[in-house]
Amino acid sequence: MIVVLTGGTGGAKLIEGLAAEIDPAELTIICNTGDDAIIHGLYVSPDIDTITYTLAGVVDPDQGWGIKGDTFNALNQLSRVGSDTWFNLGDKDLATHITRTSYLREGLKLSEVTERIRRAFGVKSRILPMSDERIETRIGTPKGEIPFQEFFVKLRCAPEVTAVHFRGVETSQPASGVLDAVGQAAAIIVGPSNPITSIGPILAVPGIRAALSESLAPTVGVSPIIGSSAVSGPAAKLMLARGLEVSSYGVAQCYADFLDTFLIAKEDQNLTNRIEALNIRTVCANIRITTLTDKRRLAREVLASAQK
Amino acid sequence: MIVVLTGGTGGAKLIEGLAAEIDPAELTIICNTGDDAIIHGLYVSPDIDTITYTLAGVVDPDQGWGIKGDTFNALNQLSRVGSDTWFNLGDKDLATHITRTSYLREGLKLSEVTERIRRAFGVKSRILPMSDERIETRIGTPKGEIPFQEFFVKLRCAPEVTAVHFRGVETSQPASGVLDAVGQAAAIIVGPSNPITSIGPILAVPGIRAALSESLAPTVGVSPIIGSSAVSGPAAKLMLARGLEVSSYGVAQCYADFLDTFLIAKEDQNLTNRIEALNIRTVCANIRITTLTDKRRLAREVLASAQK
Image: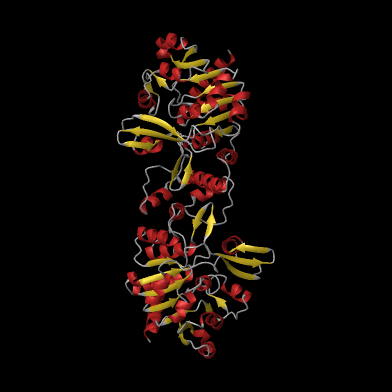
């Protein structure tokens, strides 16, 4: 069984490749839930949804999130009756949030709900939220602290970032199944996700980081940074706010206590020595992935790195 | 100010006519909420919605409920992920239920939520739920008791009806504004709605029936029955279950303590003497209403009857 730690769109691409290269039932995915938000009273879990939709083959290929061919009639109507509709929710996508919210209100845990939904979508891989408890990624800005989705979606990452924290994480625990999966993994993969707000919250859940360090399984990461730019999303801005160098070296520092091997871009070969000084083996690869062929090739490189 | 007691589709037709004949801001509508149901975790209030959509001019004219031109992409997706989708919910319609549920979770009362939603739809008439408390119409069948929507929508009124009751009504109170509206009304109109499960729950809320009896305003009803058949819906079956004669006379009996005038179908002229023996003046009229012209004509007859 192979465990993947991931956020949303970046990690989803690698996971799509992995699911095409090996039996998807052999994959257990541990998802960030720090981005989760209550939108119009519905519990939205963007990273879990992106992974679920990707593995179900229904993700919108242009956006990398949402359901392909979705309509937005409910959202337009919400706007018409006076709601603030900065968070995009398609009609089919809404069905997921309605179902999740309804199950949670019935008293099911997020992990139980996630299991039911991925099965309903015919997804063979196991998808686990990092925790069943509510952990909220909050972004400090000069105008005050705001939830991650407001920073990311509503304000399009425009505000200056003064701090990042994960409200509720100190008293949280890993969702049932998470520590067992890490303990039993034949290999652990850290997706090319934002190290601060995608992988960061997972590592901040008490017990997960220790379990990764203690694991004897090969642990392989893929950098989300090429040169000094994130492949997508606000990783660079958030890394700066945390005082990290915006480079694959800065990302490697975040994972230094548990990562065995790190795949970085060929153009970052000059970072090899510095990363290896962190006691992390470095593999230079083509980490820009767009087509399914790219995703499968990178997945093979990751799997091969986990063999060594 | 004119007060109308109503359920869903039948009453909505008369209300559409009334709103075309007088200033809609002069109308206060007291709506049945016994049909309300939690569907996929969302609070659905079918009669309030039908009245709101009708007065907003967006109701589906063929069905008499829902929003015209609506799509069903969320519902189809809910079905695809394993939900039981016997209750029809369009995408635009969903926006109403999502908004209502979200407001209720924030702690607003149903009357406050209803006020916000009708204003968002640009409806000038006041719409009041009969109560802010949860009252559930339950239908007794040989196989046990079921919620009204399950009987009406899922089972299409097929089961034998052994009892009807309004769970929670004994300890409920009228929503704020209801008794004041009845007390200050220049006229009170009872819509051509099912007397058992549309008007019945309203009359069962402690205090409302007494306020109607005490009101000095002319009180005019329109029969929902022609001959021994309901104009629409399961009124006949439900009246039988309550031991009532299925006729305008049976309906008149339900309202005998507060009704001044009852509009019945011309073909039911033979019932005039029996109804008048209940101390209710009878007006024979064309109570079949389909077109807006029909609705306005009947509204004028009702308003004229309230003048005498």
